[in-house]
Image (cartoon, rainbow, N blue to C red; front, side, top):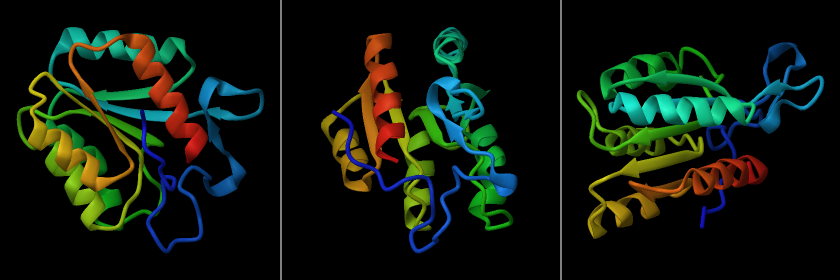
Length: 163
């Protein structure tokens, strides 16, 4: 089951990054007058990435995908470095083993900087140590591949409801 998360803001900030300048807000399922929640997907396996893009887009989410850890770091860099207070997404879904940086290292870096953006971590190599590292970081849900698409959909929705 997904853990409770504190939202997509840096600890100590009063403003949630899910609220944008100009008053636009993001919410799951694209409610009328509300923009879709943004998901950043990092997966190096093209077949899995495209399947998850389709699934989440069909569910009404705005999905931006990258195919390796280096691209994920590039996408997150201005936010991580503090150049902007707005998170590039409302939720990150990442594989662990990818070319460049691995998803777990990126999650650890985000947490070390105080960011509590919800993250779903996936891996086909799900040993006990990896599961424990993800659990210690908080605000993250772990999925061992393969998994049922409906389980991922429920986890995404629960993370948004808790944020």
